[in-house]
Amino acid sequence: MTLEKEKAENIQSEHKSGFTLPELLIAISIFVLVSMIAVLSFRSLDASGRLQGTRDTIINDLQDMQSWARNGRLVNFCQDASGTAEAGKGICSSDDNCTATTYTCKPGLPLGGYGIYFDETFGNQRYVLFADIFNIGIDLGCGNSCGSGTNEVLLDGERNLPNEILFGNVGNYRNLDQSSFTNISNFPIQTIFYNDNNITVKDANGPKTQIVERIPISYSSNTVNVYVNTVSGLIYGDSDHLEAAGSP
Figure 1 (tube, rainbow, N blue to C red):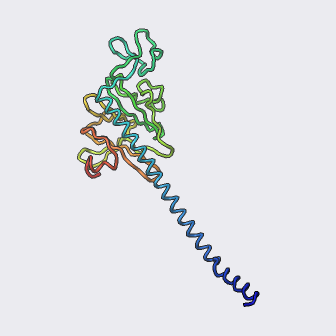
Figure 2 (figure 1 turned 30 degrees about the horizontal axis):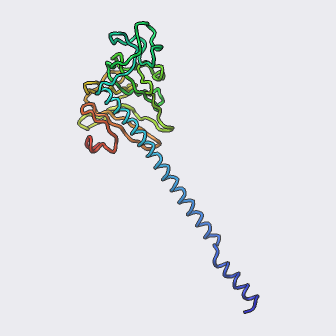
Figure 3 (figure 1 turned 90 degrees about the vertical axis):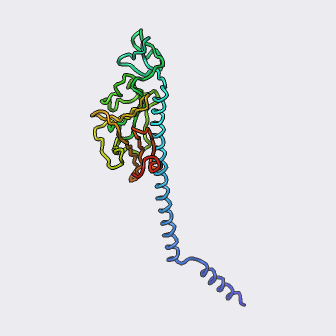
């Protein structure tokens, strides 16, 4: 075999082992498509994970408030020797938070139980945990001031949802017979747990009993729910819904 012929055959072999332009374009298109599917799947999993995490946090907060009420947990608030709370004051960290000399910061039982407060003026991204010291429910008109400056909000009781996660129509509830949903449209909503195991859901029009409260949490087009059965005391999420309360 001559040297020139061997070079020609090597060149032809190299050309045969490479990609043509159409083949390269097809390969790139497949790679882009697979990458897009992977990104969309990751976003979907991320949204699902964030929603489930938020749902579990709210369930834990509700169960904590329920447990604190049932067990008669004490909270520090400004009170006199008889246990009467100082008007205009409330939860405290030291005597400096109490203005009248006859009131001191000490542990006491909140007469109205413990609860969670949702308000649309929070931008549907925030809620607070409170102790009902004055036994009248947390101030229904406090709006955005329902934070560290509100005298019945627990010292570590402010909660902010992760970015882009929102409450839906907070306070939607269904009848105990599971037959229908009714919107609670009069914000704000508060769910209160009492020492005698009773649970009350209140909106601006007053208390609602004998219901299953539904708290929807949304991210993009995905939604998960938290349920509070005010009769049985069950608090659960979507994954527990069929077992705890029958079909949705």
